[in-house]
Amino acid sequence: KLRRAIPDYDILFESLDPEAFAAASIGQVHRGVLRDGREVAVKIQYPNADRMVRADLKNLKALLGSLMALFTDIEFEPIWGEVRARLVEELDYEHEAENIRRMGEMQADCPGIIVPVVIPEATSKGVLTMEFVEGIPPAEAISDAYPQALKDQWGRALFEFTLRGLFEHRFLHADPNFANFAFREDGTVAVYDYGCMKEIPEDIAVGYAGLMDAVIRRRKTAIPGILQDMGVFKVDGQQLSREMTDPHVDLLQDIVRASPPYTFGEDSSFYEAMYELGMASWQEATDIRFPQDVVFINRTLVGLFGNLGKLRATGPWRKLLRTYTSAGGSA
Image (tube, rainbow, N blue to C red; front, side, top):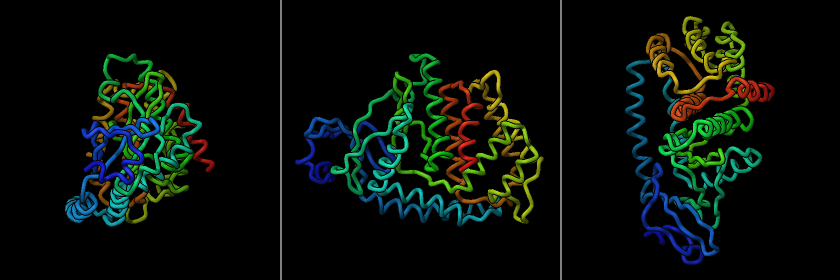
């Protein structure tokens, strides 16, 4: 079955392990060796995955639409359009291969990140073949087997990878699942799974740069206006209230403090406070309008914070944000 799934298998492959060593969202990943000796990872889509996912999307849309209608007046269709677009893109491995090629070019001069090289002759819509890039699995990387200084390096690499995607390249790896990363003893991070990528419009990148700059400079009064310029405002066109935005800014300012540098995960109250703020502002948030582009950006940032918390990473977050928001602000 594996051989039938791969075009020109007998010509290209020396061997392919029938047992998968990893699972993908709609497929499995197998190790193999090409006839030229290169070790590869081969992601093979489950049979009929396309048909099943598209059928499930109809059910998912009905469920999410009904739930949102119960609790909020936010327009559902733009959000659903964004979610559906990202999910459908993941069905096409040729599209993912192009994402990897593009990301590899963008990250070529970034020593902290490793992007696998695609083997195009062994790739099709349902099969994606890449060079095998070995790394330490996340569960092992966060254990006591590795020093905190190394975890801090990994955390910084992840932080800069996200900031580059948002501000410099405006092409964001938008699936922050911790399993999509592997860690290496030289401090680098291998990044897998490029099915969910997000193109960032220039005005949205500039808006996020403005927000982060305002947080660093403690300009709380500027936040509602920046959000409004980004397309985030009340349904009646009014800005969000300071009562809603200030508490969130207070929390984020701790991350960008000058000294001592912030350690993610050192205090669980940060995440508890974020949750409590979300619940406290739920009523006011029910009639907020926002651009659909922020859905996967916010998902990525929240996932990044969670991953840094697992690593308990400490780093020069303030300095890095200043560097990248300056680039984004002038884009």
